[in-house]
Image (tube, rainbow, N blue to C red; front, side, top):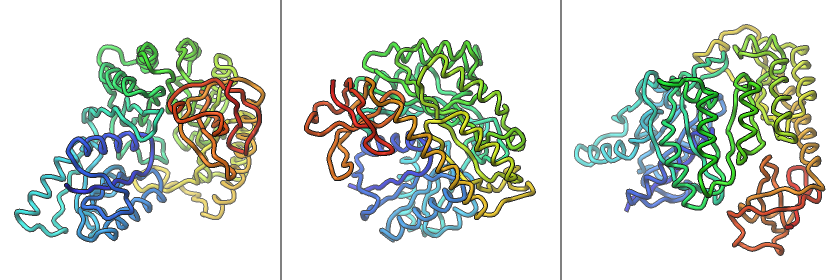
Length: 450
């Protein structure tokens, strides 16, 4: 029996696709071992969203070969798609798999092993399976198990056509491809049978779901219909959306969302900048006032909801004044959490050639300022939930401040800890009602079973 180890980098879509690979691996009889261990085969699911992601992808591929010089190292995903020539020259890599060939990865590995055994192939004869990700069909996968015990991810879409000036993803993920509704629902029904209570809808650009359908190509219509159908599936108690683009949030759409009773009041709405001039250079299709109107719509129909976002700091040409405008906008919105990234130059994007590239030190100073603001705003949101009742799905035991607690998340995705003495393992995966007493620390609330 061959041993195999996996390492995943990047987004929830990558995590979903890795879950598919591990599930398939078990079906085929491979033995899965930890990445740190010696394995016959290493699969690294790479990311290329930033320069740091590229570097981490290289490091993990080289680490795999160092773990076992005689192993087969497989590089798969976005880093591969973005840097085919570099990857082909890398002596540590034996097999290369592009973004629209992940479903066939084990066939590719077996073919490689067969040829290697028959012809004594040298490592420098690795074959490339990087193909054009544009104008291809959705690569159907089905994942009915997850490493998490109460939550499962479901991919409904791939690709993006927005071409923000800073982003490499449309080039490495390709055109919009939406998964058939019936395939999504079939997967979720199997997930429910397995006992998972919460699903997270994920994709590269969820707000484009169904844009490529023939009969009805309005994403608002398709998403609402899909969510309504999921809402009817027995056993599923929570539906969580990975991310929305702001401009999909019309009043009718948000009102329809509010009628889906299993939908969690937790919304990730991409911002990137709170300054109109920067948004224009980024090729984002809204301004700050429009974004704020969408936030207010969500809060109108989902009182007390959690809203999270992404912000890029130090975009080319960003002045100190533009940065302050963004900082003031974040204070105005009061996000639950803000994911803050220093701008990363990506070869092949428009922003890479823009004048006014900031230094790493300038970006570092601005990131630090926004991280401090995020810490404050995030704590205030959590604290606002104290002295109220809510529900959590119990997920695992976690050691916090040298004491063990059962932990889970509210529908708003606030983590709650309950003294281990008040529950037992039978509660894991079940939804329970709790009273939120106080903040245990800056990131976790202390709860009490009701």
